[in-house]
Amino acid sequence: MSIEAFKSRVLPAKDKLYRFALRLLKDEEEAKDIVQEAMIRVWNKRAEMHTYLNMEAWCMRVVRNLSLDRLKSKQFNNSRLDVTYNLSAPAISPEERTEIDDTMENIHHFIAKLPEKQRQIIQLRDIEGFSYKEIGAILNLDANNVKVNLFRARKAVRENLLKINAYGLEAN
Image 1 (cartoon, rainbow, N blue to C red):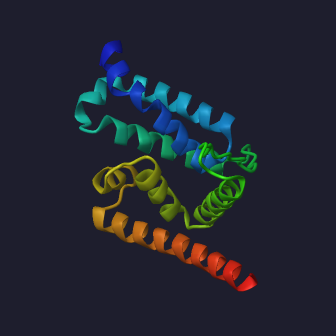
Image 2: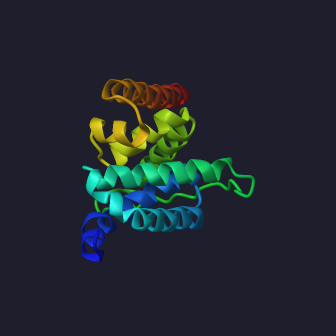
């Protein structure tokens, strides 16, 4: 693979790779390191690139494997991810903005509590926009398994949100 092909097939996925690594590692610097290491590995395997139909899915798999290895390593310091959501809109009142921020924080918290496979699938599908087939290729699962896990993940998040909302209504 030439430099031009690498730039056109691999580099456009860099931001998705970073977000996926960040979701798994919960550390910005670690995620940047993983993406950089993944890019090096992909470049070193450039002779095999013609065998991969979906380069982005293959790169996501490399990032996933590297991230999981990093999580397992003893050197990794698992620090808390401080996420801020930019939902500023001039028509939103401060009360509505606070409610949206609280809801997003709760969703993030509920996703973080999901089993790892469900957490990865919801990230890849709902945040990154991958198809079921692509997610299956990344996580080495069949499409039906991806659909079942995504359904369960969404259901768990929805049920937790409904519990909080029901509690909030009872408190008023």
